[in-house]
Length: 78
Length: 270
Image (cartoon, rainbow over the protein chains, first blue to last red):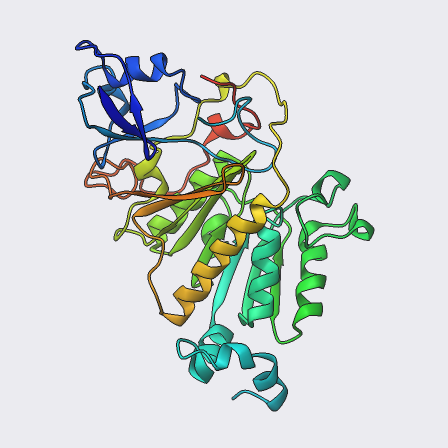
């Protein structure tokens, strides 16, 4: 199925069990434990990640913490 | 009243119909606070001074270090070891003696932030740590003070303007800082030197538009920038009813230090 992630159409395998949480893991998203997820224009509460399904055509934004010059994360953002 | 030399200095502003003599006077009467005199603060301070923003506050407790100079363009080699706010003040006054620069050689904290922001019309977050970023958001939201958030990371940056209780705030996006225990070491992620120039200049533009009362502020949309791919994107956002500071049942009613984030200088991938 096709979803849009940070503005980019992305094809992922069909998986009726998939939640936002498992998608983060599947895609090895940066800052996985802290990333904010906006699903179809609504920012999800973190506890909902594990219970919110991902559906065909969903528009998902991963919003990352960005600090300053010598802060942050070891890995570039996807 | 503008003097003849001021009319000449600001002529390229004054000829803009969105500015004019009246707008230039608004900039003169304007008071903007920049928190952080580093990568973001450098272009912000230089451009606001050049633009003739009448009162510019700048807060930072740090001294200039050799490793700052790759991106913090307001500080020069000869400034190494000087307080950043002093180095910044000298350049701002050299660009434009019309401008009053107020320096705060201190870190913002719950103890001092309300007093520091009180005198200003608009606040700009140019800090590099999450404790300060959350503190600035809370203080500005609670005081009803519009402000610009900016963050940078390697080749990525993001910025949003917050009009308290009207548009989405930082905590609408990130309810709380990342935990400190996620952070065993302080390895440096690095940043491409031009990146804060791009983001800081956008933040300065927001302050100027706010003072002029012209155009559309960057509210309810997070502007993200990736320098490697040379892409700007806008993520539409809404205020969150469950936001801990600007939502319907806020749990934060006064500023507090985010102790768990105080020493965050590195976050491992989750």
